[in-house]
Image 1: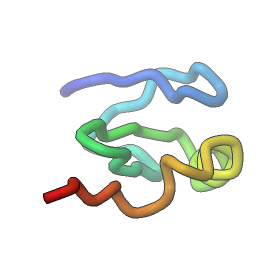
Image 2: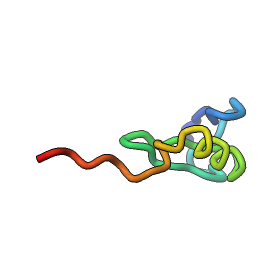
Image 3: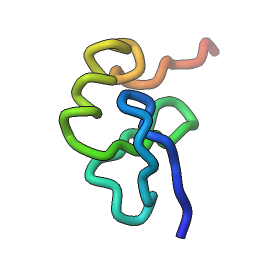
Image 4: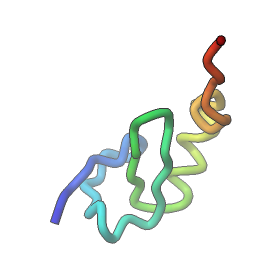
Amino acid sequence: MSRAKDPICGMSVDTERAAAKGVYGAETVYFCSPHCKATYDARHPSAASSPPTHPH
């Protein structure tokens, strides 16, 4: 069992049973609830958008 810290409320979250998670760039962030994920997405609008394209 792996644990992660919810960045909104600070709660310790079991990564296998997290209520919500999001992938932001190369990082997976785990949340205790969909509400905390929505709060994170609202505070970090660029994180919720699609990854930037790389110039050719």
